[in-house]
Image (tube, rainbow, N blue to C red; front, side, top):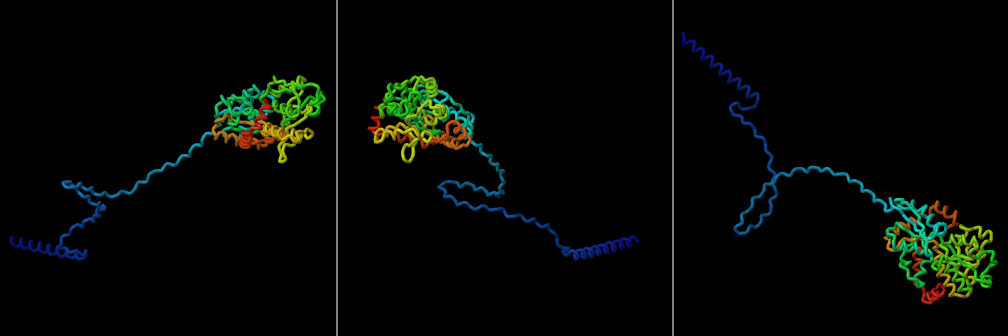
Length: 412
């Protein structure tokens, strides 16, 4: 009985085993694999290691051990670097910004040189980068030499000091006068106008011509600021070329003081500019208080001609006729009148400053406001630039020996 039960259990187990094998075979067929083989996991493919380009093999000296070669590492991608935005460069500060430009007038207030300094001073600042403050300083003395000497010797040559100097200062170097500066080394900036010279005498003397002056029964009192200026030199030309004898009165410090002396009838004759007399003392002409008897004249293609404002007054050249030596003397002395009110800076001033001031001067004399300001007092201007003045002075620098000898004889 027991053996029968065991036998049935074995038969059942065998049957179950067969059924399991059959089911496994059917499952394997459905999946496309061999149920009898053992599956291995597939290896993940590894990318090949980058190979560096071999370096040339160095030749070894006997006994030398080769050095190990480093394995090349993969090059990483470049990392972008942040680039700073360039900052704009600050504009340079103009030289004249925050500075003071000084204009020295070596004569008293009220005259034509003072007017020139002040009319330029009122307008030039706006034509200089930086718009400096401008002041005018009167420094009279020694016929204009004191202020001029100050600028030549003491004021820094930095383009911050200009001088409205005597237009005939160039003659000093030809007259045996040892000055502690060279006029021709000043750097001209420009001149506000040309101005012929007049010799005038008081109307109550009854003198109306050179002939009347020559035959006058006594010496006429002629006022000058001294011997180192145009007023004296023009008077000496009249003496030398026409035989007149003046009685010089030279204690006056500038034309405005002489004007007062003429008004008070303390003196009887003087030199005046054609522009100056019409702007400062127009009543002298309109009322006959003074009589102009001779003029140097205006330059023209035909030589020196009469100033249109004084068309009835003869020139030196007209009265000299064939006296060519006399005419050359007049021309040499009168050349300064072409740049009647020269404005310069000291010798040694840097060219950059000279150029900047010259351009500012050109811009000023072309400024409608300046022209109107000048014309109200002195008539229509006839200016010269710094370059023109420099060329003018250099043309005077080397006179002929004969002219120089005569010049010293006349202007002693």
